Image 1: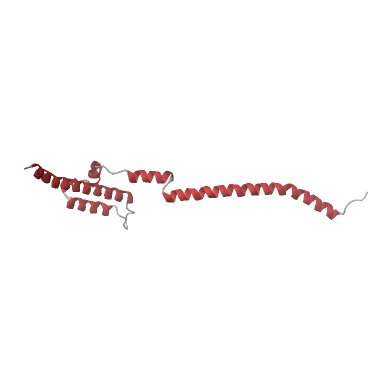
Image 2: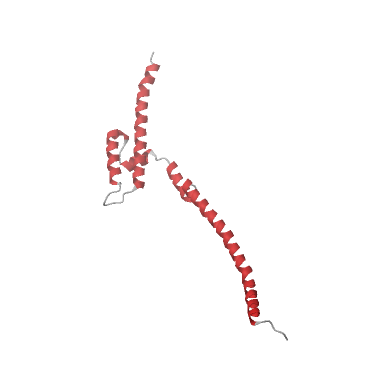
Length: 146
């Protein structure tokens, strides 16, 4: 019997073992590449949605932003009424806004500042409406008198 040299047998055995691992490693690598591509695209899309204000967090922020503060809620937030006048509302607004601003001792509250600003706008709009109605009322009575 003629046997092959020892180096050839070892090389053949190593090659057979490598051949068995080779296809498995290629399959695992292909799966990793495909999965990585899908995960990467999903992360990129989620980031784009978050930046554009879509998605769960964006939808919640848009609902809050779209919701207009009612007149009664605005009165409660500023603890003032339109009968107090625009100057009193401005003073109250500035005080509450300053108290909720970031300072050395407190991080402040941007949320409360936005609510205070919204309340101030609502009450100023109500004052403007009341003034325009008051101006229209005498003008309407002048038109009806002959």
